[in-house]
Structures are given as structure tokens and as C-alpha cells.
Length: 217
Image (cartoon, rainbow, N blue to C red; front, side):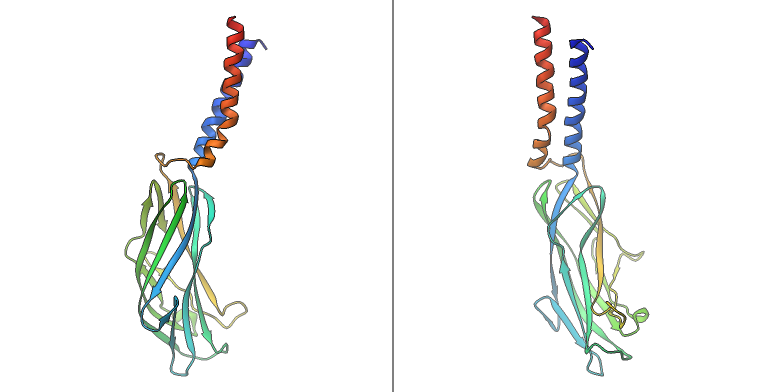
């Protein structure tokens, strides 16, 4: 292979690496979540209600720690957790008063920013999970943070059903994961780490230019 052909090959590979790095880096999304659960009988983000036999049902939210994803993908925004005490079987249930719930996404990459889903939680938890009706009804199911779009995964009514605790192994407390589809617009700004991925491509471009310069001389 001649020097000119070698230079072209190096140039092609380098450009591919550079463009690939920009594409991959622009799709890396990093975020964590925080939440606020408020209403009657809510203390420190935990809401409780007693049923007639003095069993107590409680609801709280487990936030998602800072995690990086390669978008587009399905991501975990945290979990609702339900529990009843004492931990023994009984019939019955308890209706929750209307609660307010806000789930905030704190994004750090590709561009720092935050936005929140909010809405009301209504319904009841029962010892028979099939008859539980507790749901979160967000007022909006999609938003964007500087080119990154988060779309909640909901049922056909736009709600998220919160599972009741059960008497089976691992069923008390019981958790309901909140999921979202995440996509990144092409206008999203790459994170600083992405620029480091360009280094091999830029080095290759420099080598190709040097080979061409020597050939011309």
C-alpha cells in the first residue's frame, strides 16, 4: 500500500472513530431522581393509613441513584414501596386520602438540568392484591431536559398502578418500578467526557496530514 493510500485509510478510520464518539457520547444520559409525597398522615415522605382491624398500610418512594444509560432506552426512575404491619394475613384494606406526588429527574449529562412529573395518588390498598386500586395519575407523561426526552410508561389510562403488599415471600414490602423511555435529540450537547473520545480520531487526522505533507515535499 502506497503512502497516499495509507493516508486515505488512516483518514477514513479516524473520521469514523471521531463521528462514532460524538454519536455515542451525545446519547449518554446520566441522572438521579428525588421525590415528594405529601398529604394527610404523611411524615418524612411516608404516608400511612389504618384499616378497621388496626392493620397499617404505608406507602413511600425509593429514589433512583445516579446512573448512566445509553439512550434511546428504557430507564428506571425509582420505585413505589407498599407495606402493611403487623406482617400477618387478614382480610380488608384501607383507602388512602388523596395524596400529591412529585417525581423530579436531576440530569447531569449530556446537559445538566431538572424537570418533574407531578400528580395525585388515589385509591386503596387491600390484603387481596387483585382488588387494590391505588394509582398515581401524573398530569403529564412526557417532558424534555435540554434535548433529552423522558416519557413515562403508563397504562392505557395514563396511570401507574401501585402494587399492594402480599403475604408471600418477598411481598411485604412490595415494590412497583416506575419506568420511562428516554431519547436524545441530535441537538443535545455532548458531555465533556465525549470530547476525550475524539482524541484517537484527531491523532489519526494529524498523522494523515503529516504523511501527505512529506509526500508533497
